[in-house]
Length: 95
Image 1 (cartoon, rainbow, N blue to C red):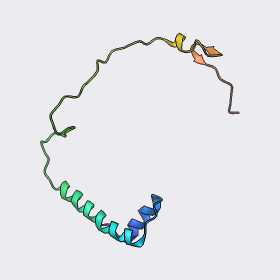
Image 2 (cartoon, rainbow, N blue to C red):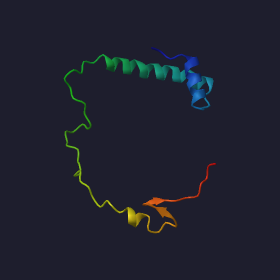
Image 3 (cartoon, rainbow, N blue to C red):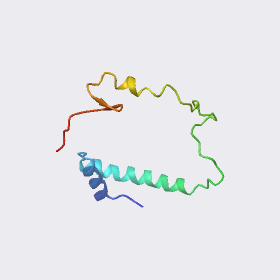
Image 4 (cartoon, rainbow, N blue to C red):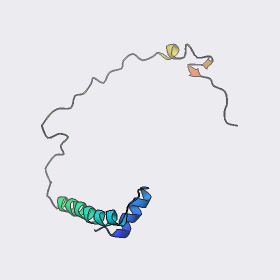
């Protein structure tokens, strides 16, 4: 896969970027270099290798999955002007 000048100009237009002819020509080479590098990476055999989240091996910090301080619906709606069964009542805005 390669990028041509028309594709660079189209992408720049879609991204609402002002790109001069000189910049567009330079971007063709840069984008083709990036695409070549990505294609080169896809040739690497990675079977049996686990994905990494960090360069250094470390465990993710996890919090205890426990129910905390819930059941406060009455406190939440206490200062509301109008409520009904712990729901806020608001004026109708759509007809």
